[in-house]
Length: 324
Image 1 (cartoon, helix red, strand yellow):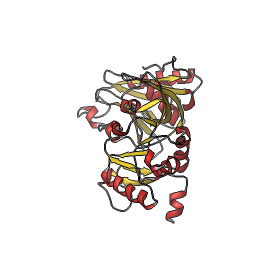
Image 2 (cartoon, helix red, strand yellow; image 1 turned 60 degrees about the horizontal axis):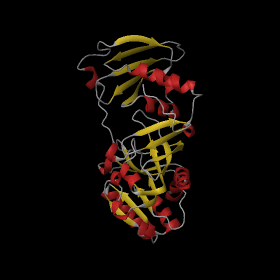
Image 3 (cartoon, rainbow, N blue to C red; image 1 turned 30 degrees about the vertical axis):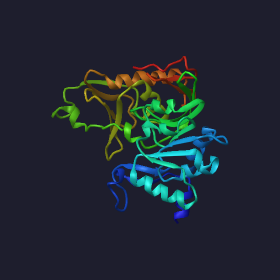
Image 4 (tube, one colour; image 1 turned 180 degrees about the vertical axis):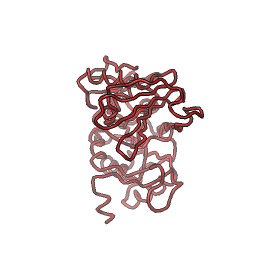
């Protein structure tokens, strides 16, 4: 049974709540996993590892990906960094069990591992909302960085960056992904009640209507396109027994919120917005832009990273995606 579970094409959660939950069943939040094989292999394919390459892996996890890298380039060329000591210890045991001994470091992966830099390849097995520039600095010119990247709003894709001589990195997204966030970049999402300031909804919010259905903005690639344009905001659906729901939008600064009520077969939906940001209007604007660009999927987007900024672009680096 364990063999079948490990080799089926599905992710396997191996840790909950940063190890605080160890009982049977599920904890509250998954914090480490063994990724689905097709995702692992597609990312390694994008990494384009060659004989003799020095590889930095961010997020040892179970150790499986590190073992594959050791098999490809030799353990002497692999550095794997894991922030969780318990995960690192278990991964080290597994790696030793199959005869591999890469340099395994317990540290914050956002810092990379400067002592063994420069690297030819860097691969992250956790998602980020901003590429740590340490990774770029520690990669040789023409070296490759492969990492899951996604905005706060949701939606996430794997990006393949090539590092330039000028210390920047740029490249295209190669497909969708859904990884756990790097601990260094997790955001705390405040409860709805913190936005209502002790009042009952609609709490004095401005009431309007929209013809854009909340159902239209819920797909993963749409959320990615919206999130790039609508920074520092996130959605949450409050569902009801009859199949209807309220889509909540909130900003991370806890200044603004919006709700959109969805009921099947309706063509017009009630909207309430509050705060300096009109979050549903921002989402509508972003969605109309996405439609006007012929509904691009991940492979039309790219990312350019410098020491000062990150820019998501469409089709070409000169065509930056606008922000609302």
